[in-house]
Length: 443
Image (cartoon, rainbow, N blue to C red; front, side, top):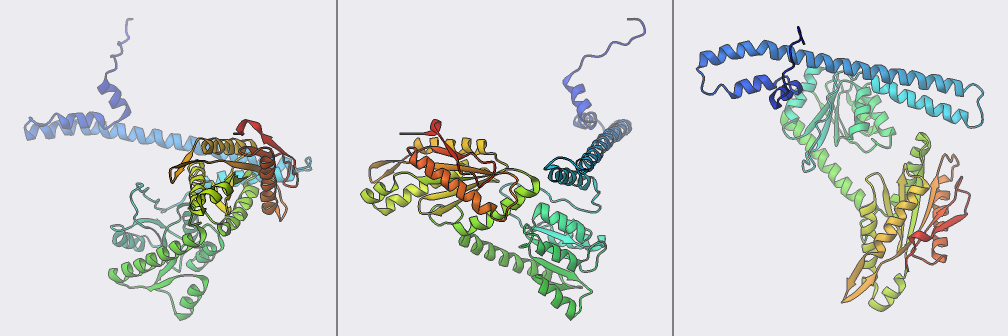
């Protein structure tokens, strides 16, 4: 067509250049091996302006995309707030709860738009990388950089410029140790420590104060609030590392003791004490975000004949084998515990009753397909399951009632022939009608 330059066909090289503005420069560098030094310099000088222009254009596009995303998020937050206000103006029953939920969602979106100046995000570690992670908190950039230079060779370090940013980052990343200044804008060190100790997700994070403004009264106050140490400025690099290592040893020791105290030795699942603490947390979280929480009770079938014929050691191996199958089916966010004897209890957050039934039937089927060999004998494994789901229940005893409903569903499954799943048909956890799932039954 006259006046139109035909478009050159795309090649791997041109496609790569379109994706990566550095590709032409890298290709040029790769071909400079046999060229005289003066010619290399000349060619590089010619290529650099175009490359820098392409990089600037790429950055501009990224900024534009980010601005569009932020505008969309801000618009969504405004719409949610408007909807929340409309629902709160004399709406139908249940509108107040829905209005509060929409308002929280709007606040979450608005929080995501807030800038976090000078917050240094954690470098994500590879699975095999077990370096401790530290959070350095100081409003002076030079002080943060000085600590960073000393600590980063041995630890993963993230930084924050004040107490507010530190609390948010601690909730998100859960560092092993926090090194924090006392005097900071927005929220000082003592205020940040109080918030960390008042939040169940951060209450166990050790805090070392690092400051030049601490008299004896301040030091005593910080230790009373739960700080593990106070490092007075100026200090040596050797002393800093020694204090951090001592705190990390203390953390490892306490973690090991806590895990031992909360773990069932036979199955490797949590014990009943840990379960009771966890279910209260999960109920609070489900209420806050208006998400379902499902509880599954499981009880082994025919364990007594195994104990009678082969001894309790064989029975223990069977219990451990059932626990192993359950562990393999749990998601990272799920929680499993040995409830006692050959009975187990499982918590499935963000899971409705039907999804809990599918989970229980899958475990039931896997157990039916698993055979344990003990002293030349092949032992078939089986269990019965009861499922109950908590949805927007605000009563004080909701956790206890949820477990009770799942337990009653379990016994319906037992009475219906064992090796099957029964689901409590609940509008709230006071209802006890259950329906056994015949599809999961096994002979």
